[in-house]
Image (cartoon, rainbow, N blue to C red; front, side):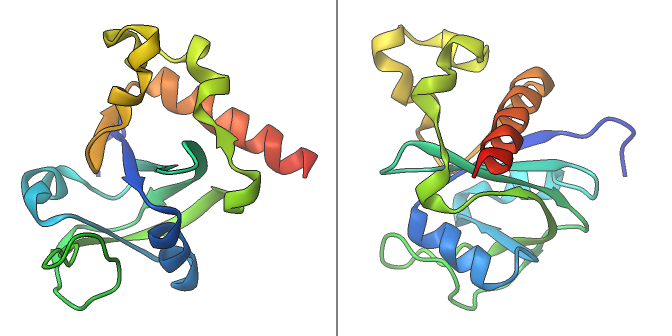
Length: 151
């Protein structure tokens, strides 16, 4: 376990987020092409979910153990993708998809989206797994906590 966590963003569908919820937020999987990223994930790293379609942040968690490979179907997307890289997690701040925080509302406070012109901010959320700066993760998590308290 590193002294400094890595902050990961999982970009997934509301349906796959619901599957993680059904597992009690004890396990998360990532797509097969992200094996190298999975190998870097370790206990103490933090995780954030961005939900496609509704373009919102829905929760945070802490990784509690090393990644491993398992091909049991839990999450789905394109045919043949079974999200084989899995790691145990513990939920921290979780919202329902219908009360998730819209990414567009947070754009002015996020550094990582500034790589793209503002009208193309969606490009920051392409792909399944990204690392985030600590400041961006903290800003999003505080926004989630505020939304949860208001719900």
